[in-house]
Amino acid sequence: MKKVTIPAIVAKKREGQPVTMLTAYDATFARLVDEAGVDIILVGDSLGMVVQGHENTLGVTLDDMIYHTRAVVRGRRHAHVVADLPFMSYQVSPEQAMQSAGRLLAEGGAESVKLEGGAELAPTVRRLVQAGIPVMGHIGLTPQSLHTLGGFVVQGKTDADAQRLLESARQLEEAGCYAIVLESIPAVVAEAISQALTIPTIGIGAGAGCDGQVLVIYDILGLDPDFKPKFVKRFAKLGEVAREAAARFVQEVRDGEFPERKHSFKSKQLSAPPRLAPDDDEEDAEVVSLYSHPI
Image (cartoon, rainbow, N blue to C red; front, top):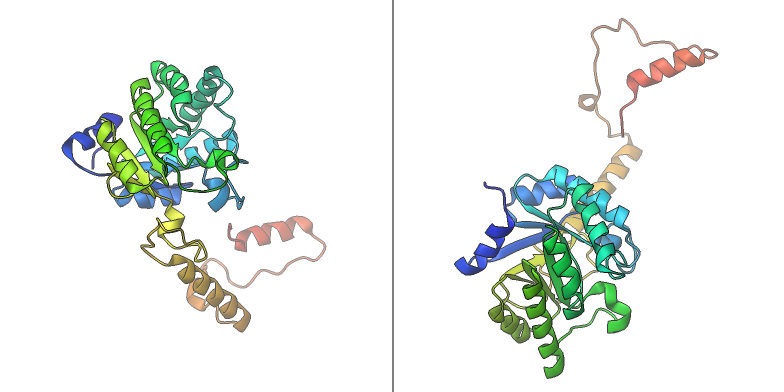
C-alpha cells in the first residue's frame, strides 16, 4: 500500500474515487484504521468530547492536539494525517495561525492542518499555503462556533445561507485548500458545492453527493450507545462488548476465577518462594519488583 499524499487525494476527485477519512486520537486506533485502508486520518479536536469528556471542543488546547497527533503519527504507515487547529489558535491573526500550524507539523508530525471558517479565513489559508503548510477547510456546522450558531444545528437551510456556503467554499479553494469538510449541510446544497469545486469535499451529515465521507471512529464503533445522531451509521457495537468484557473481568476476579495457572509466570531458577524480611526495605523492594507487572 502506497503512502497517501495530497496530490493523490486531489486526484481522487478527478478519477471519481471517493475519499475516506476517519478520526483517531492515539497510536492504537491509528494503526487499526490505517490497516483498514483509510485515506486520511483526522486528529480532530472532537477529542475534547470523545476522549476528554467535555461538552464541546472549545477547551482543547494546541498542546493537546500536538500530543495526540504525535501518537497518531507513530501508529500509522500509509494514511495522510491532518490535525485540527483548535479554538483560538488561529483566529487572532494569520501570524498566530502560522505559529500554531507550524507546531502541529514540526512537533506533532501532522502533514496538514484543518481549520473551521468560511471566506473570512481565506487570507489565513493563503498565508499558510504560501508557507508550505497544506490546509483542509471546514464549513457548514463549525463546532468551534457553536455559541454563534445556536448549537449543533444544520447549516445552509435557506437560499441565502446556501449561497454563502458556496461562496465560502469557492474562496477557500482559491486560497489554496486541498479539500474542504462539509458538515451538517442539506444534501442538495453539499452536492452543489461539490460540483462547483475542483478539490474534494468530504462530508459528515452532508449526504452522498460529496467527494468523500468522514466520521468519528468512536461513533462508527458504537462506543457510546447513547449518542445517536442521524448522520452516523454504527458499523459495530463495541460499547456493549467492552462493557460485557469489563463486567466479566470484575466478576471473575471477585470469584477467584482469574488469574488461572496459565496466566502466571514460572521460574526454574527458584528452588523455593522467597521469604520477605519484614524490616529490610531494600529486600522488600527487590522482591516486589521481581513479581510486579507494568500496568
